[in-house]
Length: 265
Image (cartoon, rainbow, N blue to C red; front, top):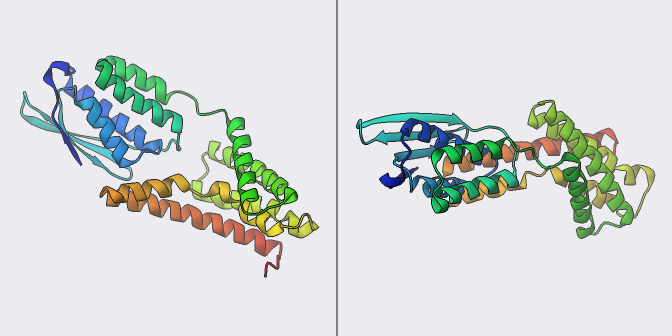
């Protein structure tokens, strides 16, 4: 929860419009993967030049604003559902820059709204670029854990095909938990080719690292960050969501091992 008093000389004329903008801005920051601390600081940075007195509650599924109008001496409550946009470093950064533009350059509410719409409507990073880079990164993890050339090649192909399947399923709006389970199973079947066909000397490393691209690392990190600042409800929600996705990943991996009847020990 935050409380902010605003400089009257930089105030927008319509408090309700400004409040709705703040609520939507905070909701998009949350949806793009920002921590509660970043959301609070960005909002405070912008409202420090606007005529608002507000209290903001960050909840797992929505942003709630209670705004007090000093002229009418009435308060209004605004609630904005957080969009499920997926984590985006680009949009996260651009939204933070927007808050600085409001605070430092003193752009008005209308300019901020236009900039905001441009940011949220911007396309995500080109899918094939993300696909290739993710595959190379996961292949590097295989090498770090001691994988040989063949194991790295297997992990690259398992990640490439598994992540592409993930992109297709998410575009079709399939439930994220099911997507993680299916993609982990699919990648694990490919990752087990070292065992099945006797490829390389490190088939165990290939199998163990072929599903690492599915680990929800950022939500885990954000949950700890929110925990440290006392946002226990959001922290617990993010942590449990990450745990559920990790469980689905594990079920997919275990399913592939059982299907192929691998003897790992």
